[in-house]
Image 1 (spheres, helix red, strand yellow):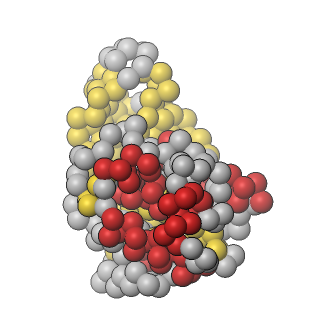
Image 2 (tube, rainbow, N blue to C red; image 1 turned 45 degrees about the horizontal axis):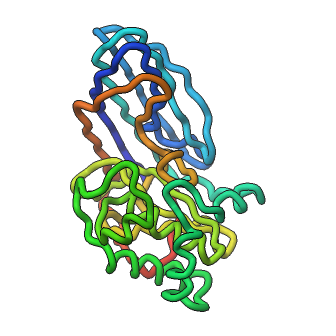
Length: 268
């Protein structure tokens, strides 16, 4: 499979702003070819970037701006082949079964046990995916950046990150390691960066997308972590910025894979 992705961001900073950006495809083993280009300019000049390695092949690009400025980011990548399955460490399996900032599995433990009883493995994954899909409505702009899984369940609506946080919380409450993956998702409409959940069962990380908006077999990983606090595509670690423009593109060479929500799938 060959996938082509691109992103364009335009944002404006205040003085003394430091930015961490995660929009590059994860550098995982197994791809037969991997070509990418990243350009960041401010005032027509190239911005110095520091690439930082993160969990699961993810990469952040760090940049600093002493003066207020408008920043233009252009990224593109063409990736052929499929990534090799990841072998998690014991520490990762422990980390991803704990509650986190946006995935309050401890608070949703009674709900998870009431809804999913003695379900395990793939049967549990399918049940959680379908329950979240049916309980929430996808409404663009309906959630705040501070909303976690509990707030999402109370409001019964959200966007992809909210769906993923709720699914992750329900799975962790059943002692299943679960994490959030930020991906490029060919077939997604409207196109944007996408968030899905991954759960470790049967010796592998299986992806579930409770929104049902894109085929999982075509997704391309950007990064993964406990929740969206680890995977945000743009965040400040000093100062502040305002996002002025975002455009995302993702496609496959040939037909999109058919999506079967009852099938186990991995991000490759």
